[in-house]
Length: 542
Image (tube, rainbow, N blue to C red):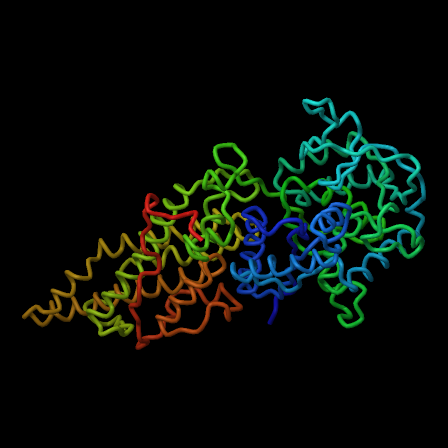
């Protein structure tokens, strides 16, 4: 029985570039949550997609001799193929140029128009096409030529003449309601540093927001004024609604069961849109905002912007070719604290790969499966608690860790503390490796050849118990690593002659100790993670 719905989004990604390490980082994080919460018994909704409207897209398409729609259509495979490569299990992929998105945008803004939250006026100010954002002159910087440039992307900005009429949303009316909402919902903005930034910004005062443009037509027409199309942020944010059935007669009732959703996962550079404009839109519509907007940090190398020439801004495809899908996913979720800027390097990736995946996890599986083949013919041994004083009654450090592991892991995953969740699982993997060394199955195997019956029986009983404990720990570790490294966990379960981790819907019950079926065949197979030498990696090969 389902625990209920658990729904969240990535940003709706802009189409002017193929997915890169940053977009993949956000998407892998969301997929890790999706996979875990399915295993935890929830009905998961996971929305992603493509943000296709706006002047920047129109200009890019024109520069390529294409219509905006042709350009957007050409970019869809870049996103879908990358997410397929990374095993992303989204439930809805929303394109903002779709008819269903048009239906959502028109219904939502028409509702706010009828409620009196929109008015028509003219705007004179500075606009950055690249960032799709208006700026006050006091916020701008100047380049070496004396031109005003965007404070974010450093590109020249355009002065929007007062002759262009826009529809405005009365954002200024929501300054106090937003501050009240932040105070009553302390977890709405995470991490705390993002929350402090947003509260300070809103306390400084809010200006009404232009939500339409009339100088180009690449956008969703506003139903109450067909000469205007929705401003890109007044369109893209509503894709979150489209992805859960808003205004969709074929998905009746779905929106009501999934909203408000649990999370929006976004980069810290777009938290202002998600934590100020978006909740104000929702409050105006009489809807509760999502439970949490989580603004994660940037991926940096030694504090610098990444570049491919330095070998630190490779595409997801490049990284998968070198490390494999699971190791790539594992590194970004385990070594970069979600919510903070993360310093990454190829050297560090190889170090994590070798230490945690090859030496700890992969080596454990390899050693234990080989010993199972050598000592028990590749069969999970039976354990007789009555023999030799009951070896299973002895202290079992692996079971002791497992007994408290779900609570710790679930807490970390619920707080999107991926590094904490991985550390909890690694504690069990490290303990299992230590257990191998301390219990020395090879010495117990020698004892099984003793000419003294009592010694032979005791050694055999203890060897069976030790190997069962190790195999059971591996079964459980594979389950907990499945949200991060799904292919490898599925392979481990296959070698243990079990089902598929993806079919588990109660991970707490499934990770309780002692469920590995006696008599199952254990397949050795190739090493899960062959060691890598950073000096031998060919990062620029096609």
